[in-house]
Picture 1: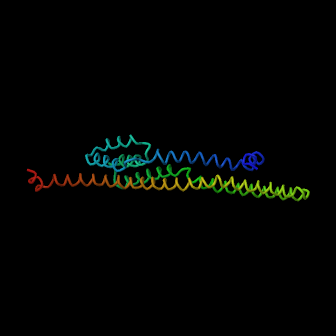
Picture 2: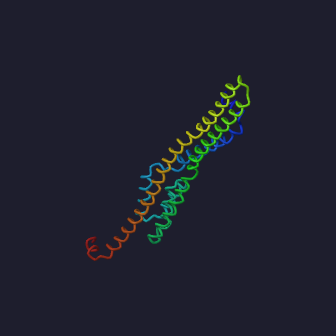
Picture 3: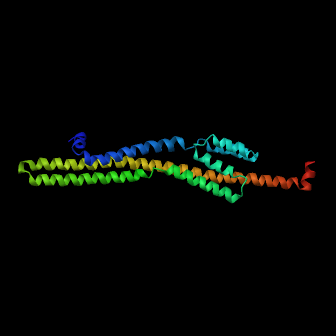
Length: 227
């Protein structure tokens, strides 16, 4: 029995597996595009170097505008949230960064865990089809004449095994894609968390540089040395 014949004869058993496969393909395509191209930022070190130079020049608005150019990138959104609160106390800046990191992480992780669920459900539907096929084959064998029993039993077992194979054919690619996408998700999430730390570090450097500059300006010895 070919796979097409199996699908035609057992459509209502196969339909849930096909539905799982279609959902898995859509999620894999969408998440691959998002995690592979939309969310990652190229040359993160160069981005932070420019942000650092702007902040140390006290050009906060320029740095915010620079982040606006990369609004689709979670790293830029987290940095922007920290810069918007740059004039606020340190704990408020940290709260804003934590909120931005949480929102970005949630957006990055969305839908990917469904692939593991789809893989498990497809496997279970395959096993269900196997059991149904075996039950039907044994019922047919029990009521058939001796000459037909071997043929009916073989056909029933073939149907049962095809159901299992189809469930696994959906489950295995979904589990592989899930592992790859989760690895990519964890990498981007770590990059986002690191961006929050780097933003806070740059703002603290700017604050202490400004504070030390004010202290130097008020020190008579420093003024005499500058003369």
